[in-house]
Length: 335
Image (cartoon, rainbow, N blue to C red; front, side):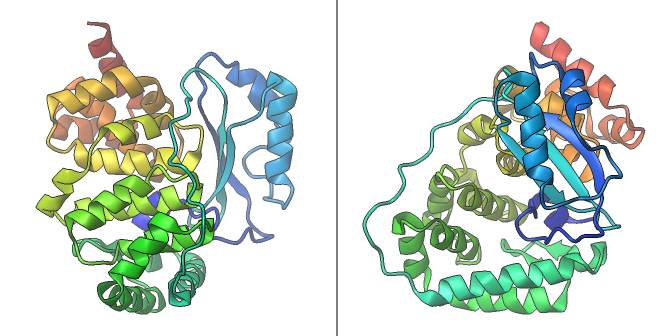
C-alpha cells in the first residue's frame, strides 16, 4: 500500500461506505491519560461498522470519561477491505498546540479553474481508493505525485500543465484567499508547479495555515518534493514540523511524520537530538499505532534517534519488535 494511503489522510476524500468496518482504534496525545478507561468507555470496537454518527459517539465517550474534549477523531481510509482506521486525539501531556498563521482577510480574486481541478482530483482519488492498493501507488520522483490509476494520473497531468502556466495565481490564492477551500486547493496545485525557492517557501508558510486541510496539502507537497532528491529541499526547516508532530490533529502528525522521516535520512545529529528532546513521547505513541502504513515513519525516526543502523532497524521492524526500538531511543534521552 503506497503513499496515497500511507500519507494522504483520506478521511475527507474517501466516502464512508455503509459496508465499511472499523479496522483498528488508536490514540495519540496520551501521556498522563488513563487509556484503559477511555478504551472501556468507547461504544465500539474493531470489527464494528462505520456509521455516520461514529465520530460524535467517540467524542462523547472521551468527554464523558475525561471531562475534556478529544482534540481530534479521524476516520481514515483504508485497508484492502476498505475498512477504516480510527485515530483519537486526547488532551494529554504529549499533545500541544502550535502557532497558526493569521487567517487571510479581505478579498482575493481566485481563478475558478483552481477549484475545479482540485475537485476533479478529489473525485478521481475517491474513485481510485475503491480499486485497491495497486491503483493507489504513485511515482514521486519528479517532485510531484503521479498516480498509477489512469484517471488520477490524467487529472494530475492537467494540474501540472495549469500550475506551470499559472503559478502566480496559485500563490496569490494560497497567501490571500479568506476561503479555506480555495487555499486548500491552491496548496495542492502548488505542489505541481515548477520547483523553486518561492514554491518551497510558500508551502512551508502554508504548513501553519489555520485550516487543517491547507496544512495537510502543503506538507504533503513538501514530502513529495523531498522524494525527488532536489537540492532545493534543503530549504525546508525541520523545526516547524517537529512542533507539528505533537499536534492534537491527526493529519498534522501524519504528514509531519512523513516529511521528517525524509529529512532525517542523513541522520543529522542535531536534528535527531531535537526530535529526542522535543517529540520523543509523540513519536513513541505514533510508533505503537497498529497499521504499518501509519506507524512506519515514527518507528524509523526512533531507530535513527537510538543510533540503530539501517540493516538492524529493518530486521527489528520486520519482526515487529517496536518495543526494542522505543526502549533504545528512550535510553538515549536518559543519558
